[in-house]
Length: 198
Image (cartoon, rainbow, N blue to C red; front, side, top):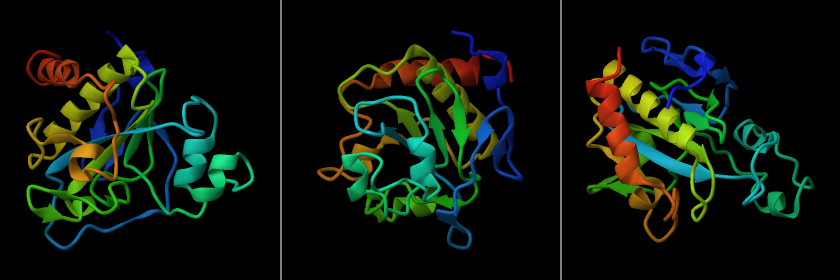
């Protein structure tokens, strides 16, 4: 599936920002530990309020502007200081919050293959969706393209090191959920890396 031209983004590996992505800088980030490079890609799912799509609330959460009285659910999360490197909305729009070489606060208490604090060494990508509802085809296309760009820009990354939030925080997190099609994503990533023009 071809994405609209504005989402045919490229990645400036030095600055850590995508071109042709909407940029909403989050304060919820910091430097990775000295000498640590991203080696893991973590896929998340998010919707605010839960089960509702669209609206300004994800941007508001990641920029500490979520109104506690804006929805009953918001009262319990408005004080959180969280972020992700990027979000892919239902229509394929890509929003970036944190430069990829910096540490976004997306995984929380987490571990992968015996290594704790996954935020230190991972890139977190959110998809607008829920655990049980199908994600949109254009989201898989945008996600695969983003992963391919990241793997080309950061040689420490690989599509073999691609996991869900539920994999790094089992029992605590369930996203991106049972509706997420991992074989579809992996096939799209292979296409982007092997066939698609660079």
